[in-house]
Length: 260
Image (tube, rainbow, N blue to C red; front, side):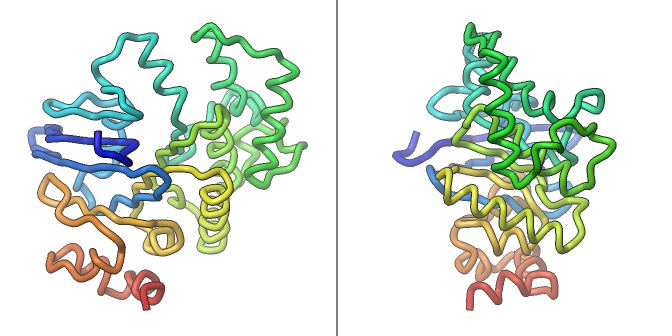
């Protein structure tokens, strides 16, 4: 791995639905940064994330996270590795039959698989700490997912992603489905947590406001690979059709305003 890389992807190839989504894709996520991944619909942003977290095996290439090959470990080691990162899925992916408390506690109970069973009173304390961390009230712990607003679902899912104190987060379209005010509040929450907890994050997004608020670097996916990567100001100047439409169209104004 390179000196500061937490995630390293090399020569990634993936074929889905009869077409190549990725062909020779290389990407590093550096320690302490928020790296935003953008691209047009069908460019393979979420497919890339799913390969990084071990949910979709590449046809060719390697994915290394925290120094380990995600697809070259035994089951126990894979479980141990996955406990070191948190994932916020696009729609939250809460268990509909579990209340908020049990959703957040789920990864804590899973520690028993690794031979590290936690006491129930300790789990209760940790869940309440995570609720407060994401701006939810103690009484929210006993609500069911169906009772939550879209913004609350995102916060519960984030609390669950942080349950094991992972220093690495994978965020799949974190503000999708939120109204502008809720999306802005969630961006600020993520920014505060990134600073306070010294997190490293890979964020798949199409939301230019999130990119402007959170990202240290941005990687652009097109033609099956990363066609540009760097600080937003650098990437915005790359001569590529998608980059021109994304950064220099009307929706890209928040990013350009931030760069001025």
